[in-house]
Image (tube, rainbow, N blue to C red; front, side, top):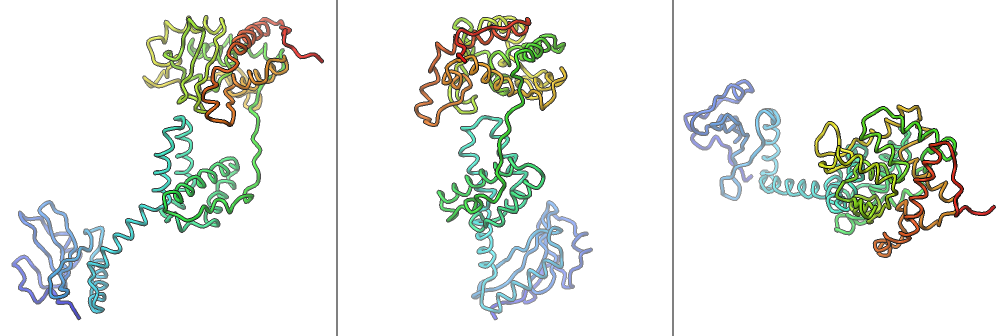
Length: 422
């Protein structure tokens, strides 16, 4: 047996020969230099001048004196330290250096942590999220942190099985969030495929779960498409008694029919009122493509009235509570709700459906409408260069749409020159 107990060496004056007690360790006071409280069989507590207390075990292996760290007191109790010492002595009795065993375990734990589902997910997120919108980025990581990390985070990604992943996504499904369950499964699949590409896993278990969740049919956003009801809505928006900033946002929302996030985050630097154009950069768009919004004369008038109030700000609609941030995502929606329109009647996205439905009915070019809605085509390279496509047609269409809304608000109607024949 290649070990020698600490008792063979002559103890220093501070070393106690009696077996340690928890009370003795707890009451041990720091000194100017390190000193130790000895237990038995090489185990002792090293007391540092700052008061920290470290468990150490002195032993001999292959004729050399060595030291083994067993943790910090009181995180590691006296009982746990003795168990660690006894395990080390068992290794010594078998001709194994316990220091090598500890180093191997440390390396294994490091590799397991580097290859854990959470570590690789955050690596994947850091790589790809800069290309996403801020809202989408927050939504993705928040979902994974909430619904996947508590159960899969510490597991080596190569060891996660399809049944384990299914339990996680079904937990989301069972709380009534089927769409979220589908999205979570999709994001997990992206992480697994990334781990394969970076040689941390061999396969993607999410692929085995195809059909495991009930299909989810996306619901259309609640909208109003009857002209008389639209007129009533526009009059209600005009009479909204909130702030001027919110009233302007409510005026532009149906007129420009862009996504709510794109409206509330609109920046003055992206507007050219001389050209009657709002050019939204790719990094602010959901589809990551430059988008041009032709501005009808009604929008120009509204923007010029707003400029003296927020023109010195980055945003058209700044946050009233937090400087330097855009209007809250709930501001426009809450204003709509305050006017009596419920969730099943109208949402912030509902203005887009409203415009799409009526403009199609009036016979405007389908492609021009889709382009104005920023519904880009599948060919990403082609789409990146086609942001100005149908621009002349879209300018006419946007002015027509603003005029049409004005007529409905006043109680009349417009018969489009482009209206399809029956």
